[in-house]
Amino acid sequence: MDKQAKMTICLWYDGDAEEAARFYANTFPDSSVGAVHRAPGEYHSGNKGDVLTVEFTVIGIPCLGLNGGTTIKHNESFSFQVATVDQAETDRYWNAIVGNGGQESVCGWCKDKWGLSWQITPIALTRAVTDPESAAAKRAFDAMLGMKKIDIAAIEAAYRG
Figure 1 (tube, one colour):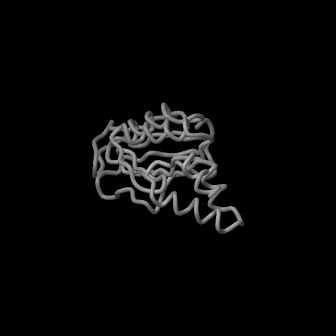
Figure 2 (tube, rainbow, N blue to C red; figure 1 turned 90 degrees about the vertical axis):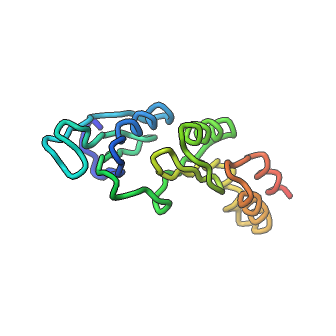
């Protein structure tokens, strides 16, 4: 982050904030790793000189990775939602997250190896399930409920009826 952002998302890690930031920067467009700050002294979960915080950007969103220790764990109450334009982009992000030690969940959700939740959400899915024509939207929604990674062709087929 070149200048101090007015608002930054702070994400808690157990000593591997820099690894996570580099993974995100290598996986998503408009993402990068900025400054890496080291602890000036001993602290509850680390030593002087350990990486304390990492400034990074994920798809244009400024973040700060904090190596705070084992006390706090990520959970599904916070997730990054990534809107994808096609199946190839959906597959690329899903496979990068799940294939790098993450795990699949349902309805387009997955977790990365650090426990952070991601929603890999095709724009086609959002359009289908929010259509004011309720029968078509319900068919698409019901199709989504049976999926892990979203299959755009199956969503579109269900939407059409």
